Length: 221
Ligand code: B12
Image (cartoon, rainbow, N blue to C red; front, side, top):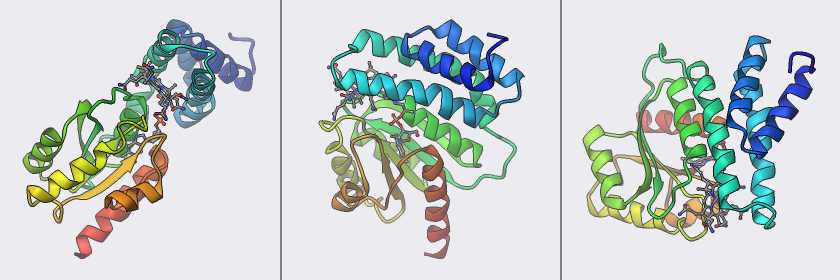
């Protein structure tokens, strides 16, 4: 590993992630950090690059669920090392953000990444986890006096549930108090508009920017 260039190291990391080799991916992540490669570059050019090929091959029937799970485990092993570096807890609180993956959906890698980046940007983040129903979302919004609710859905079959949650917020009299932001592979701007969400975030970086804009909007209301 030591004799690889930085570019080769990240390419290797992506390949090992594809092969679900958690220890190798974690070791390569540590090596990359030791070399001074930024956590953002490791994330995007190593881990996310590998996961993106996994996604394509899963779609095309080349990989199956067990292999994808192994890749997800490898990603998580590396994220343990990156998380403290991506999250800067010293910042003043920007706002309170409740986040979760909607009912029926167990994908959490992207959602956790968004949560982590929001924490880094100074948000107090309450990460509810996966398979969250409307009652749990609304209860958490109320309990934590959330400024923003973020929902993640990775399946076309679970994205309609986002509308159910927004309707539940209305029924509980909470819709005017909280901004709603959505994200995940199958959703987009048009879907956000259709279900009455306030914003759509393509990825964790734009998600943070949009969350900050929503906070600025809120303070003017
Ligand atoms: C890993 C994975 C799994 C793992 C999940 C492990 C885990 N702990 O998360 C396992 C193996 C469990 C799995 C299971 C299934 N999966 Co899957 N999975 C994936 C895969 C390959 C990668 C997802 C991922 O982690 N990407 C990496 C992260 C970093 O990216 P991300 O999730 O997109 O998140 C980013 C953005 O979307 C955004 N974002 C996400 N959430 C939010 C929220 C907010 C508020 C904001 C602002 C932004 C935001 O920011 C994130 C960071 O940049 C995708 C392929 C793909 N192209 O997405 C398929 C994929 C999502 N899965 C799919 C399918 C079909 C399934 C299964 C139904 C398979 C099966 N037959 O059992 C099951 C469903 C289980 C369930 N009930 O949820 C399909 C969905 C197809 C569809 N259109 O509905 C996909 C697209 C694969 C494919 N191409 O066919 N899967």
